[in-house]
Image 1 (cartoon, rainbow, N blue to C red):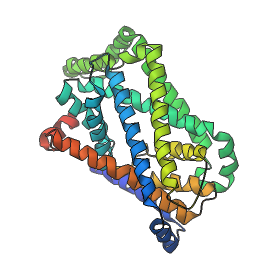
Image 2: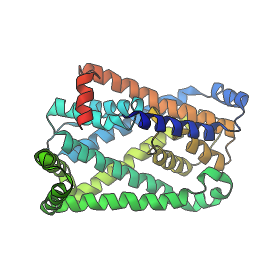
Image 3: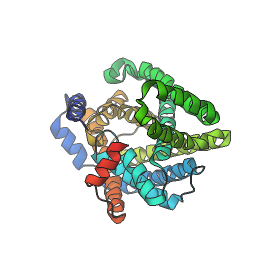
Image 4: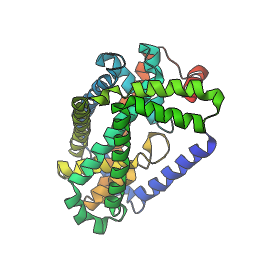
Length: 335
């Protein structure tokens, strides 16, 4: 990445960390963290990895029209992608897993990235759904919650953006020849002629990656698995909550999950530092959870989400015999 992008992400993380920690009583925070019952992390992590397996199955399903790759092969590559997102800026893990899949199964990077973008669009729609399901309760909280106060307006804007993107992809999938003609026209108008052949080839493979969206049944299956994935992740929030001395409803945790994951789309330092924590603490304090307990819970939850999948992804990357060297950097940079 360019230096200014790294600096911008770091500055945004610093801002969100400040929002998360302002007014925090350090002694009470440490007491909350020390007093937690960490045995509850075990079922939480197990549920989370079940969700990762469903993610791998969903990716296998999306790639089916391009190439049948077993879920058991997709799972390690999916964890490698998580690892890349957690330690490299700008969600580099998404590109990394597309490159690894190309090396492992011969699937073009362009087709893989098309399915990955589709995944992210469906994830965004489900996250916004989690917010909208809880709008009546959220309306009671926004008056005193400050940071969460504008979430309704942000949710409406985000819904328009995600649904608009989903509509474009569905149209491109249903009418690939029309989409190809429109893309070709745009390439001829905007791209230097010496690059036409390469860009057209990428576009064709990208459109191939959308083939799974041509069936209404496939679209429903992708949506269903996306809901299941995020309900399982909310299950982890619920288990980790039991390690601390507070209790909110599962729907409140769905709302927290939706808000924090939408917030992590904001550029930040690797691992979503700050952008995960500040909105999570804000949601819980809006529900009446004491600030130090909310901060302790959110920190432990963030670590429990970050460490296991990052370690497993690093293990699988090493087992694949792939190193983050100059060759791989160049390959991802081209993408």
